[in-house]
Length: 311
Image (cartoon, rainbow, N blue to C red):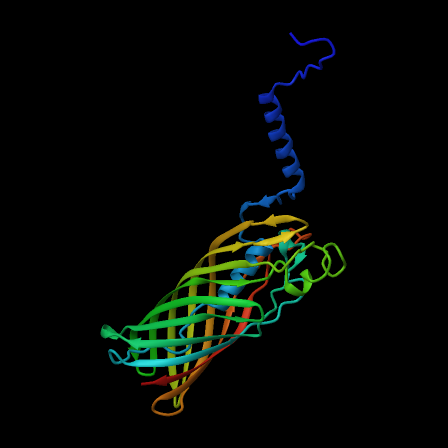
């Protein structure tokens, strides 16, 4: 029994130890910053959504065409080519694609598309076309696209030749599209940064497709005219990787569907080994831009060219 005047501590030593642990845990939680909220939504986009339109627009830019009439090459002969295609500049209304057609995205980066190609003659009159855009950063964009094509003429009569071409592509395009570097340099919420970007984004666009084309050519003196009609199935993704107003946005947008395109152009043999070709590419691309609910055609129409050297 405690004597008179002795103060009794109602908390036992084990209980005091538990309270100290709880207090330390609370203090540590208060001292640490609150974890940012992560948005991991997955959106299946309608084929006519502005975001889907932008995906199929740039997928069409990279579509591998023959850039010449179909022809039977000698087996195991090689042609090295350098393809140069223009990328039309998009207006502000066309770039208003984010959040269903509200936010203007920074996608006017490069005026042209450059791609090395290798064409190999195969037995049975087939030709194999290989193309690769290596991952070299230009204007904040890193493109890594590999494409392959297989073509064969199936009809020939005098100056006329008809053929078929199967091609496909796998690859990605990375860049700070949703939060550009120059925009994120301004304070979040300011006039220069109204969407609250806290740093450059690291977004990734996947541009996969498979295409089947019927092609043809007709030679007039030293000029060979060529044309093609293609149907293309596209399977695309846009992975957002941005921080806005403290929110980590990892939204994944998916879009897949069919497009069709036509090409027409001409080629010239400059020497025994060197030739050049040029063509026009057209693909109608449907889109519905708010506040309108009507579907419209906003196509890709661009000029393509290639210089070839035969070994």
